[in-house]
Image 1 (cartoon, helix red, strand yellow):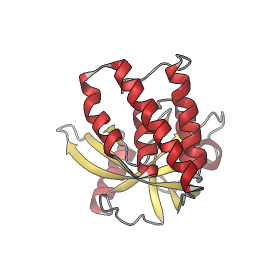
Image 2 (cartoon, rainbow, N blue to C red; image 1 turned 135 degrees about the horizontal axis):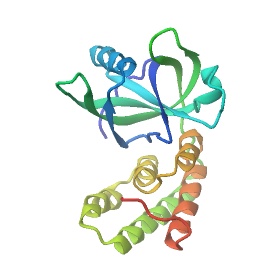
Image 3 (cartoon, rainbow, N blue to C red; image 1 turned 90 degrees about the horizontal axis):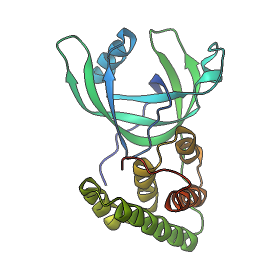
Image 4 (cartoon, rainbow, N blue to C red; image 1 turned 45 degrees about the horizontal axis):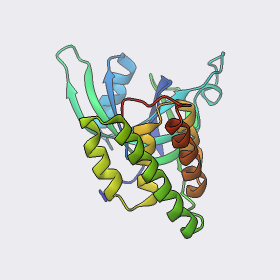
Amino acid sequence: MLHRPPIPKRLPVMTLSGCNLLPHGLLPLHIFEPCYRMMLEEALQGERMFCIGTLNNAKDPGDPTDWIHPASTAGFIRACVAQPDGCSNLLLQGLQRIRLTDFQTDRPYTTAAVTPITTVNGDPGEISILVEDVRSQAMELMALDNKEASRPIQEQVCGLEDPEMLGDLIGYHFIDRPEERHLLLETACLHTRLAHLKRYLERMLIGDISENSA
């Protein structure tokens, strides 16, 4: 497992609609707005971290507490390439589930206090059963898809033993609905998280949910 840097007590928040990030996932971003260009520059000079604040359906964006989903993931800037026009392309890697509170808007971009969401494992025997269920479902979906691009994912799914990492990896590759990802993000209980993932994959296998590009 890769070393995880410590998460700061406050993080910049990049607000996006219909977008979020799971731990162990990767999110490509194009930074072009002046406020986020400043945010990126300051992050690169510091801990190289920020998080995605997914916008909810609130109609009146007054208090950020009302329009930013509190569940998020601390993200680490894994790679960043500056463009001649001052914009940047970067790859944000999910590190840790977090809950956002105490939003502040005194800078050109929003910041928030960060509280880690600690995973509660549950019964080990039941966890093991769920892990093998979601692993088997993911492999079946990739076999049906039969894309060359899915082979590296198959190797990861087959070889990964950590239940939490496996659940997040499969969720990252197969769940593209923000509301479903938020259920995984905000759920501290690993058993509940894996059970939700299993139900989602079951729906994909019977055609109730269309498969994404993974």
